Length: 90
View (spheres, rainbow, N blue to C red):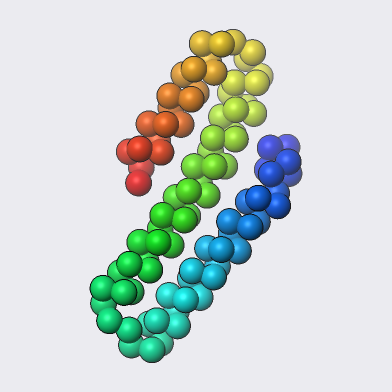
């Protein structure tokens, strides 16, 4: 997918940050950290992975649904779908 190659460094940066969050979560669990802190870290990881998924999905819609059709209506609809997914799939 060309859009992934085009944004590779940005996506890899996000993945590396997620890896750091997961490593911190692992350390918290090993250190027998309190539940509230662990839950907060889990929520942060979940949010970061969700953000990564939404970024890749948005780029996919733009590259494979909008650009290939070259129709303004399709671009608006793809943007709406991406926003709906971002809102409701949290």
